Image 1 (cartoon, one colour):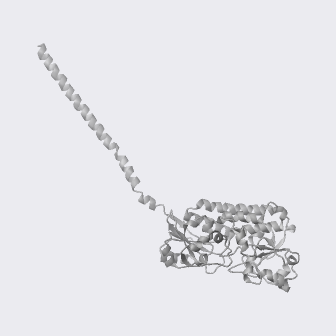
Image 2: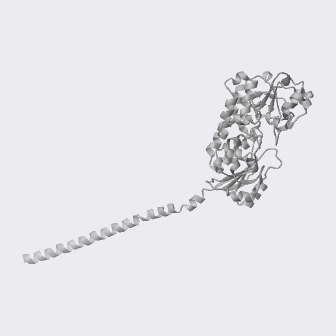
Length: 403
């Protein structure tokens, strides 16, 4: 009996062990299946990472340009061309000269007198391929040949031949390359200054130099504030009367060529005798200049390109100007030309410190105008070019001019 019971018991135990083994095997299989299923999300994520083409394409930027045109550009563009007077200057301000793919004829021209600080600081510009003639007269085929990703096109105040939205659309249509067009702006008034800043920011967005664009804007604002704060409390009755003659504009001019809103005079609170004649460049009658009889006359030494010393020669030899107090009292001074293929704003700022030093020396006693000019040029164009620039004009800039 016991043997039979033992045998039965052994069978029961064996069956139990077999069942337990089956249960454990099933559990392992389920764990294995569960493990396989847990990898599915990883495969999905990997697929999302691999499919980066769409993400890269979405990096394109859409910029609203100065004409209100919406222009889509590559988000990481590294090859651009500049069209129009001054456009390349802004690109240098933004420290993006390495992005240049080609230049217009002005940059390749061998000028006997070179008044553009950015060109003096970057002689290699002459070595780039040609994309067309100066002042925005583009050659679409030449532009296509240099394969830029973006075309930047500037317009200048008061120039009848400046580009329009239609011109930008036409160039974009002919080249298949996005064209961003914008006003050059100026520092003469708040509206034009806003245009200038907007254009710098627009260009900064286009070439990935947003931080540098803000640095340039902040530097200009800080410099203007420094100039104005030095002289803001000078009573109106003690402010000097001044005139700027020989102002260059699309070439050299004589003594009657002036600028009623000459920014350096505004910033140092001097009274420009020609203020109110117009808002931009003006040619005034010599009789008016004699009647105004300013205490100080500043000469844009770009006038030398006229020959016979330009405006300086007129002050020396023109009998109708002989009675001017500034000429008789030795208060005639040379300033650096600032209009050369549009406005060189670094020269405008540098001139302001020299003007301030001449008119109000006690307010600018800490300023060496030439050293300050080189500080400004270095910030904007990367090199201290004052000596080279002034040498183009017989070193008459920042000097009293003997008559």
